[in-house]
Length: 393
Ligand code: SAH
Image (tube, protein in one colour):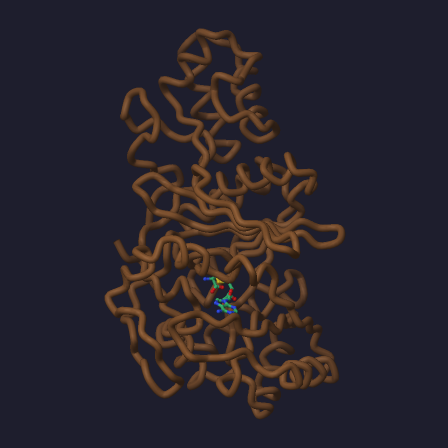
């Protein structure tokens, strides 16, 4: 894994040295690093707090805009630190208001984030890795293979740049952040954990408004359980029995369902912290009514809220979303059993807003990095498509 703010090359002119990016520092790290910098220069202690305000509470995009610092101090800061957001490549706005950004990162990797407006809230979905190593069969990003880990600065930078973009267009403040973009956040804890701190105590977003979505990386769930903040957790369940789950999610072989549920029970601590199950309903694959009792059982054990999501078709498999009646049958079955449930309508279909899809359309080269070439597979084919390499590269 990469460290919290490990960026390796500069996208700007100037010294190519390893200047740390201010966007990747937690408030404490920023206080230490920038505070030390100013102390060495004989500057007052409040200079570091001024910089923190520019980073976390302004729309400024460069150190040159930090107008309450003397010019000489702006220059000196510039020589020691970077203040770089991901560069906007493309933005597509859906008829339903969903806005998808493609960000060009250093080294040419491209990742997505999505702004999803709804009455009373504005949710931002961000990426934690360029690509993904986990190869879930229903996921476009999974088919693309793994590019690299994002740094904390690149993760928090998606938030900062998206929030400014939304503010400039009168969309209001980002109220919620979900790690449901590209990548497996708990396979990049070295950057995701500091990014959680930055979003929470830097930008002031409540921990309960930040959701980490995982396909089931147990050590990551345990590490999140140990954190004092009440971050929310979503588990991409998609199947309530191990045999079927293994077919959809190769990681099930490493972190089996029974152990996963034990880890989630510990996370939930008897109702203290909300767990959500994500269940993508794929016609004829995981929507058999016989799966309802085990689903109800798991949801009851961890007091989970269940999101039923009609499958969003992707080019690599010939699967279709479940019929509406099947989705409704699952919804009422859960409801009658006392499990809180919602059916999520797909947003931004017209702009390829499902995980990994816009990048796949615009940058086809970045979707074939996987050792196994994309091919159309049916349910019976393609088992063991990819070996599990969680910490690739
Ligand atoms: N790796 C993390 C976060 C990224 S995916 C995780 O797996 O949770 C965010 C959500 O989108 C996951 O619940 C994932 O299962 C779901 N998803 C991926 N591809 C999808 C598709 N084609 N249709 C519907 N949901 C999909």
